Length: 171
Ligand code: IMP
Ligand code: MG
Image 1 (cartoon, rainbow, N blue to C red):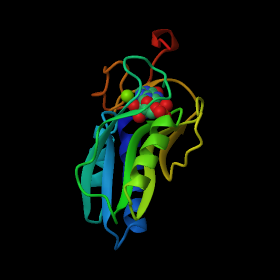
Image 2 (image 1 turned 60 degrees about the vertical axis):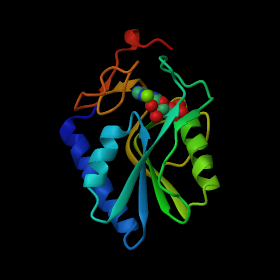
Image 3 (image 1 turned 180 degrees about the vertical axis):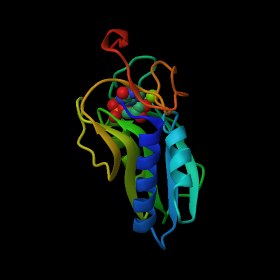
Image 4 (image 1 turned 45 degrees about the vertical axis):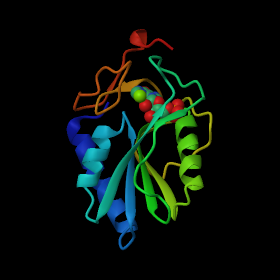
């Protein structure tokens, strides 16, 4: 779907845009584990402003490929949030449940502002209306793997993003 070169170009663009938007503000980048670990690592290196970085972990899928709507935060951020401008970094937004849950969590934590950067905005199965402020790529359908994205914990290490063949996806 997207080659390593295409991803690198898009990450650089997002980095420029985010750097300009947050210039002069105190930014905390929060990557959502596990899927966003590679994207977060590349994105922060594309920023031209000082940032702090932390991670949160949300779990909803288990080994299946579709969201069940109940999202558990299995690891919280450890840096204090209050008064900070937070940018949540997600690998992919699918049903929107994970992001909705995470947004509530940060809003309750008294942040100064909250925005979302997601490498992939996948519209097909959206169930919860949620705004992605900085979408990397928009995709209509399919199950994607690579560049941090997994299927049953496999394929995260691939440098490019691939669409898994339909017959391999158990829903
Ligand atoms: P949502 O709660 O349905 O929006 O799901 C978001 C999470 O599901 C993402 O952070 C991913 O970890 C996972 N996910 C959704 N779609 C895909 C996909 O196509 N490939 C890999 N993981 C996915
Ligand atoms: Mg996942």
